[in-house]
Length: 261
Ligand code: GTP
Image (cartoon, rainbow, N blue to C red):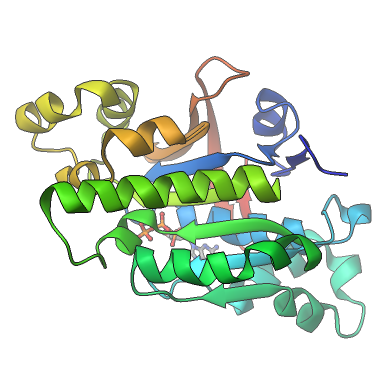
C-alpha cells in the first residue's frame, strides 16, 4: 500500500516540498553538525512509522541501527505523549510503541549487512516500514581495512543498502555528522560532492573523515539530502537534494514534543 508512498514527517512545509514526506524505496540522508538534532529527527520518524494511521502513522515496525547508543525509547515515548496525548493515554500504548522498534548495535558495516541479509525477506513479512542508520560514518569507521579494498567494500555495502530500500520498498534514513558549524560551507560541500578532494584540501572546516569514509559513491546513492544546521542561534532544515523540489530551507525548534517547524 506504501509502494511509492511517503512517511509523513508532520513538518508541514517539509512534507509539502517532499510531496508527502520521506519517500519509500530510496535513501534519505540527514546531515549536520553534532547536537543539531539528527537523532531527535530519527526518534520522531521512528515514532511516526509505528503510530496508527489515525494519527498520521503507518502502523509499522522499525529497525533502528543505533551505532553510537543514542536511541532512547524514553525520549521517543515523551515525544509521542506530548504530540499525541489522547493516543498515549491508552493503557499499554507506550510499551506497544517501544516494542515496535528493533534496536540493533552492529560494530561494523559488514556486521550490519550480514544481519540484514539474514532478515531481508522477513523485512516485508514483519511489517517493517522504516530503517534508520544513526550514523553511517560511525558504522563505516568500524571497518578495519584500508585503501582500494576499503573503497571496494564500501561500494558493495552502499549498493546493498540502496538495493535493500528498493527491494523492501521502505524508506531508509541515514544520518551523518559534519564538523562545520557553518551552514553555507556544509551545503557547498554537499552540492559540490563531485569535487570533494579539492574541497577538503582547501577548506579545513569540512569533515574530511566523513568524505574519506563515504566518498562519491555515497553522495550519488542518496536520493533526498536534508542538511540540518544553525545560523544566528536558529536551527534550519535545508532540503539540499531532492528530485521533486528546489533547495528550500525551514527553521525548526526542538521542544519536549520533538522537532517542530
Ligand atoms: P550528534 O549525534 O552528536 O551528531 O548530534 P545529533 O544531531 O544527533 O543531535 P541530537 O539529535 O542528539 O540533538 C541534540 C539536541 O536536541 C540538544 O541540543 C537539545 O537541544 C535537543 N534535545 C535532546 N534531547 C532533548 C529532550 O529530551 N528535550 C528537549 N526539549 N530537547 C532535547
